[in-house]
Length: 270
Ligand code: NAD
Image 1 (cartoon, rainbow, N blue to C red):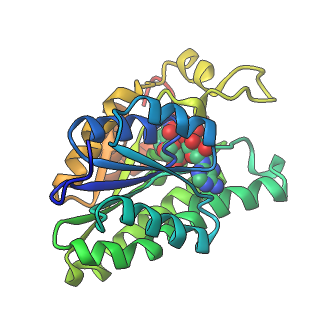
Image 2 (image 1 turned 30 degrees about the horizontal axis):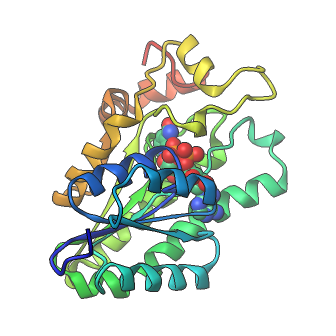
């Protein structure tokens, strides 16, 4: 199928895996033209293989590179009939552990990808989203870790709180442009990001979470929330029951959340 004039388009970073991939496939199935952007070319090819011919393009993009953002968006806009309706600013990494054990390189990488990369993405997207406004959307992937602070995730939480700050600021700043800006706040989702083996416990984060009775949701629950975010008008969209519950608790019972976090983090009882 070729790009038609009225077909809407979505540019997705982190499209080679997990949430980005699931969202790419979901939107393509609903007739959207999809831009899959990532540093992982093999992963992008796999996502592409899940989408019918002509429904998507791939773009090698390191979100830390401001000029590369301009190049990738220009390339995608051209392929998408000169329009970008939605930018899903989603690429991120999830290293954790006690802050004192994280070295400078690890911390810098985390800040660069999860924060600088998202800010660059917002800035680079603006000229395209202005053209398709009203109704165009910047959706930034924050996290439940952007709503509560959790031990073992200090730097990660800092980046995700920052993404929510960026989102709230741009929601106000771009309102007059007719661009909607929202943050996606998933709880734990079963993707490769939580599949890495931790040095301390010799098990994956996913195994540790499940052992502690913590909810880990399938990635299939995410695209519907992204769809709602793209078509809705809220500022924050939680994904999964735990994220919803904890967001409510953080609002109404912050002392209880703090107490539980000081006991060791998210467990079955919270
Ligand atoms: P994932 O590891 O499956 O996917 C992340 C993707 O980002 C990968 O394809 C990776 O190659 C890409 N990426 C990493 N660095 C990049 C860079 N510099 N430039 C471009 N692409 C880069 O993980 P996921 O769970 O799909 O994560 C997607 C987003 O969701 C992240 O921002 C993550 O922090 C957030 N998130 C995930 C969870 C979860 O439990 N899985 C929960 C809350 C928030």
